[in-house]
Length: 271
Length: 256
Image (tube, rainbow over all chains, first blue to last red; front, side):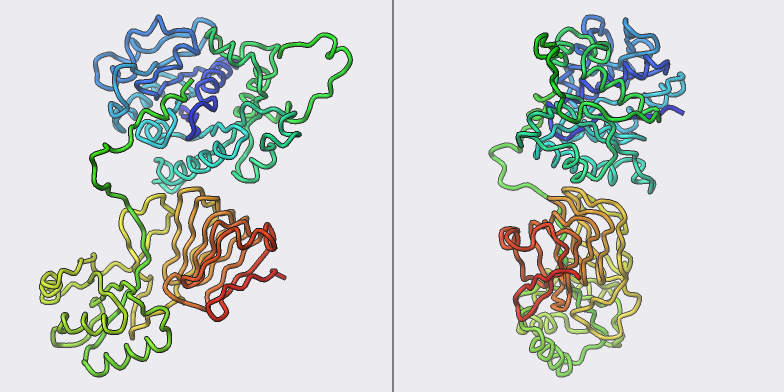
């Protein structure tokens, strides 16, 4: 049975696509056959973050419409074995996704031996986001440590537990929170919400805290998911998050302010 | 990044005059079991005297599902009497064709008949108002019922969700998020933080109370009397509190 994981947030620009790329790469690095699907029809981005935009021939909507089969549309990642990308269509709109169409793609992927299917949700709570979350077994809710992002995450958690297929069958979607762009120094100054505050407001399990890092932006521009950068704190934090997703007990890091030693102050590392 | 998709869905066209939106409005149901003009008028006047605040253009659903009389009741006359006493018949529920014909002539909305169970699941956008009290039998007209079944919710109530305990109490074992709304005909208990809106006694039960472990609400209301967060921040904020109504005034007290 494939585990279907939606990466969602409600709010835009909090790091869903970065997270989808990092988590799917991380799962594949751990040896699991993984597919990552871009549900942001019309605003395709995942292919850029995964550096396969020039290899897109057929897309998700082509597969749903029967213009291409799944094998033709899946792009094999060049860095990691076991990782495949199903890109979004850039020319259609989100209404091209249907419940039946999405279900068939997910069922076919599972039948093909995929263990994990990561659904990269568009922002908002409209049709595209609904399609991305409807079949989810697990939801990774991405939030930034600020009030409006947390509020939107709360809203999306409500939708997950009332409108998804699991909810319709009287089951719960497993939910977990991934806090991104976290900066302990700004938390200490009172400019950002602390992890504990967000956990308290959302009352949900913490999957990980990704520290604010320049390497994240650099990684998406270069098309290398940040998890491949083992020297960056963000990369390490994503590796930890993947381990927790697989059931490992890993202590949370990067939550507290780093004590800057003399060595660090002399050789300022950019990470 | 995907921030652009925030703007992908345009708001409705600027020429649109309206848009349709689902809403959940708690409505009082008037279960009519017998009709005899004088007795009916007398009982209405008596109830109106008991709870004058409630009988002020209050919309009601006339329910004839439990009507035991043999003659078809004169609907126009009943509506007239209700209006005289501050009730506005807005809709009707009945399985009787003769009554339904009268309702159509009087331009009353017709509600689906014979439904006595309310959906248990919290939903984000209830499709239609469904204020059916979960009572199996209704021996006499009771405008202010609050002794129905208790609804218990184990999960957090999230922003945008609305949970209504029709005819009884609501118990929330987790938190009520900002932007969420909990309503009950009876009392509301919240064993987590109450950050959203809580409305107890929505059908006019002035003895309803609200209990919470941490009062951080946007609004609390009992039988239509409400307080906003700014009225509570100074003294009662983030503390365990109970709220009850005393002579039209909300009283907030420590829970101890």
